[in-house]
Structures are given as structure tokens and as C-alpha cells.
Image (cartoon, rainbow, N blue to C red):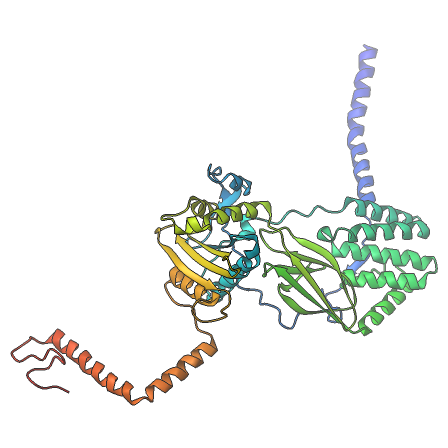
Length: 486
């Protein structure tokens, strides 16, 4: 009996002490995680002294420059005739506009690849400028990859922070420098605020070691990485505040440089330290001197990321050719099969065109084929299909030697627009002015008024015939009775 009572007492004590132990453990864990932030953000996210938007940046609502694909949902398995189409992501939704358009440039020979890309760009830009064409949305069909983070850099930062908190500035400076290098090596996964915080701690550690020049350089890097960050007065002393302010003053005093970014295809978004600064071709982006993480992203293409050095009062230009992501590559392979000379000459809808429309939920598919003749001259041919009505636009030829007029890429875009929207593309101001000037000159010609009088007479006669019984003596020329004539 005594043994049973003792066992019951011990069990009861264990039950009562468990919640207290759990609470103590949670308090200890929370205390460990609650580390004060080293920086604070100022209200202005991007100071004018560090970045100025490009003078001629494209508007935010820029016309689509790449074939934009529809919103997504599960996709049926690839058709046997298109084995590569199986590479297209299975997350394609069927919520795109019912009249969505997909445009692909096709090179029938490798020597015609550049002209095919330019023809695709021209058609997309001209059709997009009309404002009444809806492209398929590639951003939804091919969402960007999730950021991978930088575990190595984060681990080095934590080690540096531990050394700094333990008053070991030598070790802290080494760790923070290594963490910054790890972050910089992967610009595509960079978090600007984290890099700025790393440089700030590096500078503070160097300042504790008496290295004022090194500290000021680190603070400058912190400002370039994230201009809105400032050292928290609750964590850093007056010496850090003073040297940081000096670094900012010196950076502001330097003349800005400019950044230009060109990509193929055009229309890619340009991100500088994680901020959207415009689309390619980008010119005139003004930045304070320093190294900047630059990303060039376009739906359906693998993102491009690098570090660009902007020098004082000097231009910096980046050029990149974006590679198609696997899903878009499969669609382009299908377009290449449908863009051959034999496919263009055949009747009906090529199976590859139907597959493209199905995958992207597009009503219209436009293929712009480019090829080289036996003499090495480049030519273009455009065809378009309405997959709903089975109508087809064909025999649209392009002469790459012409910049305007019949046979030019602009004229081809006009024909395609008429097929898609039932109307010609809006004229430019110059075209309108030329048209008005031409009509004025015609109006001054005597023969015009003579012809106009005849047309007016015939028109009046038609109206008269439509409303009057044809009696005896009817004049078939002017519609008036008897021998009366003009």
C-alpha cells in the first residue's frame, strides 16, 4: 500500500512540474531569438543622391514585347506529334483572355535567327502599341523560380554577430567580410537589406579595431547596397554614427554615373538592388559610383544576374541574351515545326499551332518566319491562325531591306492587326501629316473637281432610282427623267 501511494505521489509531481518546465524552456528560447535589429529604415526608400530613374524609361504599363501567355491550370499530356511539349510546366491555367494572341519568331536557318527575333519584336511592339491586342501572359504560364536564399552567407553573418556581441571585433570583422562576399557571389538571391546590414557590422567591427578608413569603406558599401538603412542609435555608439555620416556625405558629393541595359529579347524588367527601374532597352539610369547587383528578368526566360560597376560621370552598359526556360523552349520548338515552308504551304491548321494555342489558351497564333535565299538575302513571311473560326492569314511577305512601305515589317504588322482586330494600325503623326498633305494637293487639282461632279451626279441618280419609279424616258446615266443631263 505504501509503495503504491509513493508511486502515485511521484507521478503527480511529474505532471505538475511539466508545464512549468515547458514555460521556462519557451521563455529561454524567446530570449535567445529576440536580438535587436542593427539597422533601421528611413522613410525615403531610395534617396535622390543615390539613384535617379532613367530619363527615357519605358512606362510601367509598357506594351508586351514577348509573346505573353495565358493564365494557367492543369494541362493535358503532350500530343504524340510534339514530344518536346511535355517539357511545358503542367501548371498552365485556362483563364486567359478569350482573344489572346501568341507570337513566335521562327528561323528556318541558323543564319536567320537574329532577323527572326527582330521580326518578332517588331510585330509584338507594333501590335501592342495599338492598345486593342491582348497577348497571352507568360508571367503566369512560367512563374519565376522561388529565391533560394544564401545559407552560407547567413551562417557567416550569425557567427560574426556572435563574435561582435562577445566583444571580439577581430573575429567579427573577418566573419562579416566573408558573409558579404558570400552574398555578393549570388546576386540572383541577394537581399539588399541583409547585405547592407552585413557591411554595417563589418564597418563597426573595423572601427573598434581602430581602422577608420576600412570602416568608412564598409559603410559606403552598406549605403550602396541599401540606401534606406541607418545604424540604430540603441546599438551603435557616436563613433559609428559619426563615421557613417561622413561616408554618406562623401558618397553624395561624388558625381553620378549612368547605367544602360540592353537585352535580347527586349522588354525585360531591370532590377537594381532588388528595385524595378524599368524595361530594356534601358538607358540613362543614374546611380552613385559603386558596385550594384543587377537582374534582368523576362517571363519564360532564365533570369540574368550580375554585378555592375558604375563609375563617376561615366556610362556603364550591360548586354545580355536571355535563354529560354525549358517550357518556353518546348513551345518554340513546336513553332519552328509549324513555321517551315511546307507547313506554311499546307492547308489547314498545323498540329503544332493547335498545340501552342491549347497550351497557352490562345485564340490567335502568329508565326513570323525568317529565311535566307540562295544568294544570302534575308526574307520574312508571316502567317496567323484564328483557332476559333479556323480563318488564316497568309502570303504576308517581309523585305528586311525596307524600313517602311509595302513589304516592310511595319506593313506586315498592319496586315496582322487587320486580321486580329479588323482594322488597320493607327497612323503615326508623320503618316497623318503626309496623308493630309497629299489630300490637300489632290483637292487643288481641277480634274478632281470634274471627277467629283460626275460622281456626285451618279450618286444622286442612285438615290433617285432607289426612291422613284422608273418612268418613260429614264436616263440610265444620271437617273433623271428624259434627256436632262449634266
